[in-house]
Image 1 (cartoon, rainbow, N blue to C red):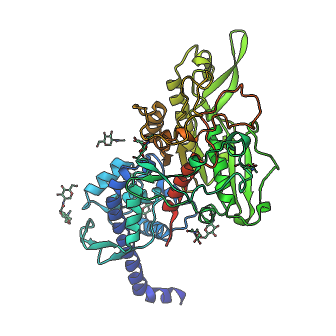
Image 2 (cartoon, rainbow, N blue to C red):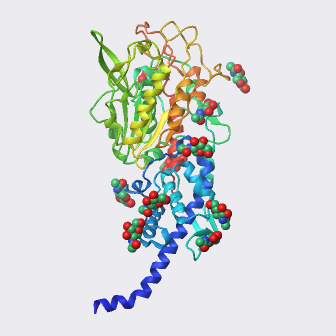
Image 3 (cartoon, helix red, strand yellow):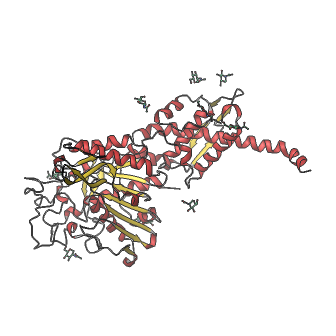
Length: 508
Ligand SMILES: *[C@@H]1O[C@H](CO)[C@@H](O)[C@H](O)[C@H]1NC(C)=O
Ligand SMILES: *[C@@H]1O[C@H](CO)[C@@H](O)[C@H](O)[C@H]1NC(C)=O
Ligand SMILES: *[C@@H]1O[C@H](CO)[C@@H](O)[C@H](O)[C@H]1NC(C)=O
Ligand SMILES: *[C@@H]1O[C@H](CO)[C@@H](O)[C@H](O)[C@H]1NC(C)=O
Ligand SMILES: *[C@@H]1O[C@H](CO)[C@@H](O)[C@H](O)[C@H]1NC(C)=O
Ligand SMILES: *[C@@H]1O[C@H](CO)[C@@H](O)[C@H](O)[C@H]1NC(C)=O
Ligand SMILES: *[C@@H]1O[C@H](CO)[C@@H](O)[C@H](O)[C@H]1NC(C)=O
Ligand SMILES: *[C@@H]1O[C@H](CO)[C@@H](O)[C@H](O)[C@H]1NC(C)=O
Ligand SMILES: *[C@@H]1O[C@H](CO)[C@@H](O)[C@H](O)[C@H]1NC(C)=O
Ligand SMILES: *[C@@H]1O[C@H](CO)[C@@H](O)[C@H](O)[C@H]1NC(C)=O
């Protein structure tokens, strides 16, 4: 009885089945086209660097909020189970950009090629899949089983197109514009500025340095909106990892965000730590948004250790080993890295018996090679342990120093500057930035560069100089022309971070 019944239903089932299959194919075709359209754009953006050797199917296992992504997944599964004329082979997991372009340039190719391009698409996880409709028949199935594309695919909302054109905007080219509506907080409204950055509290009288807004040439960066930013990181961990200049940026972020919190008691350090120069790790909770804004000090991102050289035990830098603190950042939702300033001859013992790989301590190694090796170590670690579906990774590149008349430890100064300069004297782009960019190109997971070097270079006026300590304290330390006053230049770096997060995650 039961058997008969199911038999009689079969034609209907078959129709449903066929419909599902063609619907899936339609979706697939659409996404292939979508990939074609977006590929040239993606190509220009370092943070969309497509990796290879990654299992795109595995990427789906994480919880995706995008309905469309889910739909593709269902679609592929259906096709996989149909097995008609070889459709089932979607195992091309090692797809890289070249593969994508290959399959795109042979649009009349088999469905398996289409599927590979579709599977690549969700890896560009920052892109918005919403607001997209398919009109007409995207696919015409031929009797012989190969497929060709016909019909039209439309993107329904202009906003999505604008979104991607916004991404093309180069925020690094522009100028500083005096804007009296800045700063976004003061030494009075923000309790988190530590002594080293609190220029106002330390007696700096001129105020213009707080009032400059970065204006890109061809687009606008939205003014930092603390409420909107907190909504973006609601329930998440925003983590800064790096040296004291990243602590500088992290404190700026705390200050920017706390302005949107009505009851300041609902923001506190998880272990009751007070921010000082000495202690490395801080985790501030924003109870109202169930999010944390954390900082972990890591001067080099790789492991500072000790090794025996001859008879002595020496401080070394393990350029082949990730910083031990890394396990604490692994689960973050957003990470902002930096490292640069400590890679100087002064701080690395001029590279003599300092850099270590395995058991080997290099008698001598130049700082650029060591920096590159360390970043490679960092990059492989990220590729291995960071899930790009969960974690957005940023790297803030080198922040310029402005010592005049000597280095930081030889009487260099910047106190006289109270205005940005119109032109920067530097003609060569920072070598460390170039090394960074090269390393990022070789990585599988996307990393967005917060490219602040050029724009900060105009801001000779932004450093604490002699206002990095309470008045009256001994000035034996010289002037600080490396860090930045708060409020000040790092607020702009955070506006850039806000800009990227906002454009990447906007939904309709
Ligand atoms: C999975 O998604 C659902 C809603 O789509 C959400 O409630 C849940 O928190 C997500 N789980 C994870 C682990 O992200
Ligand atoms: C479908 O293909 C897969 C592998 O491609 C195979 O394992 C499976 O047996 C096939 N199923 C049918 C019904 O042919
Ligand atoms: C898919 O095709 C490739 C070569 O095109 C082959 O090596 C692989 O075994 C096929 N996979 C399945 C599941 O049929
Ligand atoms: C991708 O293609 C370009 C030129 O088309 C080539 O130079 C490059 O080596 C290819 N990369 C890989 C990983 O095949
Ligand atoms: C289909 O693509 C092949 C290359 O893969 C090409 O030689 C052929 O001309 C194309 N056919 C059509 C109808 O475009
Ligand atoms: C399949 O159809 C295409 C046109 O879409 C044609 O070029 C090709 O020769 C056909 N292949 C076979 C084996 O019939
Ligand atoms: C803020 O700076 C002003 C000087 O501009 C100073 O008088 C005041 O004491 C500072 N407040 C705090 C809380 O440091
Ligand atoms: C800031 O963002 C919040 C939440 O998105 C919004 O309600 C508010 O209007 C925004 N404020 C400004 C000044 O744009
Ligand atoms: C920078 O340029 C502006 C206008 O272009 C000018 O008013 C200002 O004096 C210049 N500043 C310096 C230091 O040259
Ligand atoms: C970073 O910005 C500078 C200009 O300040 C530009 O020359 C450089 O190409 C940018 N780097 C990247 C990776 O976009």
